[in-house]
Length: 269
Image 1 (cartoon, rainbow, N blue to C red):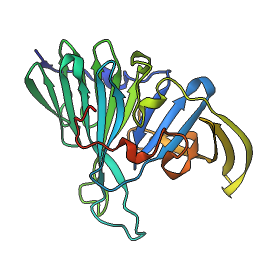
Image 2: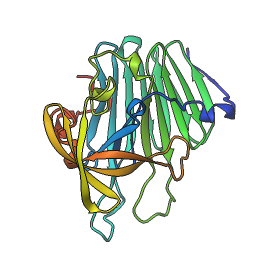
Image 3: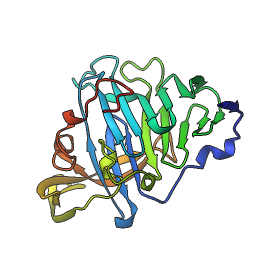
Image 4: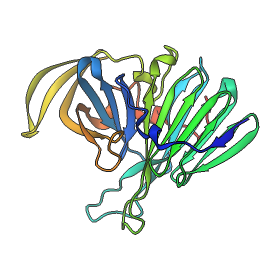
């Protein structure tokens, strides 16, 4: 039985961890933070609004996460349409837990009972298989019992903004608790990634050098840049230096980005 309870504000920063963090935020920027190497890798995934991507797929533990992107309200003067994640589906098959997280609300289904939470409240749910903590208008922490912890950040945009919409960021903690066979756009990196960077040389911008990366038997041209981690600062974020892999992560991710497109928010195939 899930029972709502009032949560104290002391938990608002309780999810910061020194372990590797795997996240997607912004329009969608994927960041693989590797503290043991004091380094990060990053790539973008672009597709048409409405596309649903599989982020985490672990058949062994029954954990699946899919995310759907949404586009700007209209095309900006520069002709670019940004896309962002606005909806996530989280499933733990073994315990029958299912969560749908949107920019409006959070729906938690367990044991055939559904509880809906709003971003406008600070609240928590404790169940036999999942704990959920909402920090008002800021973050959602989902802890699957004996398994992984996810943090979803809410980015609120001025309602009358001519182009942008509210969107969500997705951060994974405690990834070592998932099986070695975990996959997905983020999941494939949960147990590490071997790579070597050489031949650092001037790039198009003086502050963004290019380099050659060897990974998965391939040689890639990468660029030093920055992406933002919003866990500590929801408004401005913290710049994370990273090696940016071009062309939708080509050569770094297994296969092509289209291989990760799924038909529904709770697809588990």
